[in-house]
Image 1 (cartoon, rainbow, N blue to C red):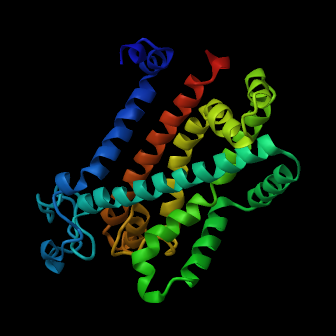
Image 2 (image 1 turned 180 degrees about the vertical axis):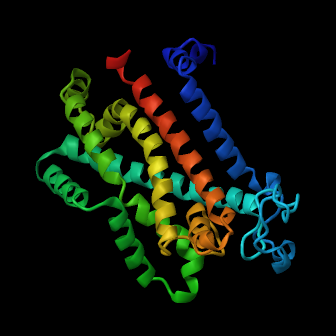
Length: 300
């Protein structure tokens, strides 16, 4: 721990007030989502705590508002603050799982393409090039739509989380694969790899034990930035109606439901979830930008 506080990364972090504020906001968003069952005033999934008589209540500072609903309620009588906290749990879970899937798939294919080369490299990179020609959100929409066709209608809501994780994760592997492939092409020509070949170490062992640890540096930075992209992708899919169902609200679902009431005066139903989404994405992006610069030796 002492070495960390004496490192250049910690020194760079302390010299960036914007990064420090972003890190605090990101940490608050994560803690609020993780500890939602403890911190949230109400449980939006508990029907015993929901009453239609409390529907469409404004924030508590409004004359018609109630103190027990600080940010107001939605059309079902659910507390907006609680739905934001529980919705953030879903958005973060989808983003983290989708990014993890992209990392495993992209790093594995990039390592294989860079080290083996030849026809294997050509096939993997051509598939990556084809996928890059389409916007990621359109690919996610296509995968999500196809995935739902293979799921029975009565099971679609219960399996929606897995479908959306798979659709977002499958669109994000290309960036990792191209980055790891480039680093692998550099690493495999170095002396330690050649020495491992001479003593008879297998290709798989060389890739996993020797090359992989030396190409993971950029992956951490890409993953940090892609968490924010995955949150936006999930919110977009949910907003378009092909993501999380209303019974399992995410931030995108909350914004989608609230927009129908935006011009009828119930602005808080969509504005507060939108603000929460913006704060979460911007703070994570700012931390990712700082991490990219801090780990770049050319900027030291």
